[in-house]
Image 1 (cartoon, rainbow, N blue to C red):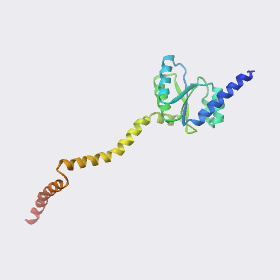
Image 2 (image 1 turned 180 degrees about the vertical axis):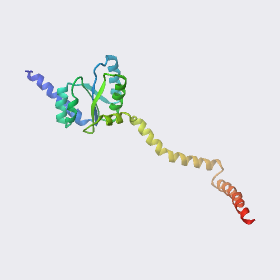
Image 3 (image 1 turned 60 degrees about the horizontal axis):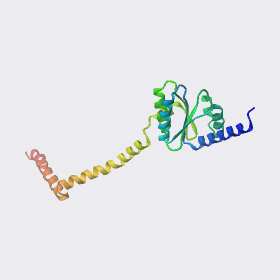
Image 4 (image 1 turned 45 degrees about the vertical axis):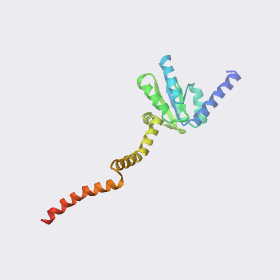
Length: 189
C-alpha cells in the first residue's frame, strides 16, 4: 500500500488537474506514443507560444480529475500514453496545432476533447482545427468594417479629383444631356 505522503501528492495532482479542466475553455487528450524528443520539443514550444498548457498525465489521475470536473465522457479514451493540452484563452489553438502534428506523425493521435465543459466528437475537433488563428479572424472582421469606409473615401477622393462637387454635377449634367437628346430624337421623327 502506498505511503500517506504519496497519496497526498496524488490527491494534489488530481485537484490541480480538476481545476485545470474546470478553468480551461478547451482541451484535448492525445496519445503521444512513438514521438521522439526533438519532435516533442518542437511541439511543446509551439504549444507554449500559443498559450496551450501541455502535460503528460497518468490515466488514473486524469480519470479521477474528469470525475471531479464533470467530464466523465473523456474516461473511455484514457488508456495507453496520454497527454492533456488545455487552453484558457483560445478555442482553436490546441486543436489546430495537435491535429496538424498528428497528420505528419502516424503514432501521434488526438483521442478526444472538450469545449466549454462539454465533451465533443472528433468531427468538432477537426472543424475546430481548421479555424484560422484569432489574429487572422480579427483581421478579417476589421477588413469587413473598413470596406465601406474605404469605398466612401475613394468616392470623396474622386469628387476632389474632378474639381469639387459643383464640377462633378456639371459633368454629369453634360453627360446626361446628349443621352436625353438622343432618346428624344427618334420620338420626334
